[in-house]
Image (cartoon, rainbow, N blue to C red):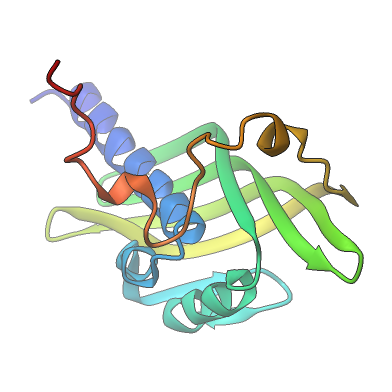
Length: 172
């Protein structure tokens, strides 16, 4: 395989790793989130820094009481050299947080600055940091849920994502 094609495959593997990280956060899937890091990986978010396992536990604790979360990936730039890669990943993270008077919508946007390693043919995070570029907090407005009460709603560990048996049209 030529080098350009291998680099493209490596970048795709790393991109999917990034998406699995986001899924782990949003679905509160601790096992999945932890699987995106090597055991000796390090995380530095400024307000928390240390081994990845401690960071994953911090995330599970911090997000547990949120009514909803959604982490979106934007621009993804990855520089691959052999079994090491560096990335800049733009993100927007939405958090619906309970307050004394209802809920707030908290949006945080920034970039992950990452180092990835490939060990035994598998790419994972070796280092992850988060740089916040902006944030916004405002009272929640959810008219959609009032207008469409039977709409399918996202969830955590019991989200429809984890089912595939329901993705077929019913027999008529």
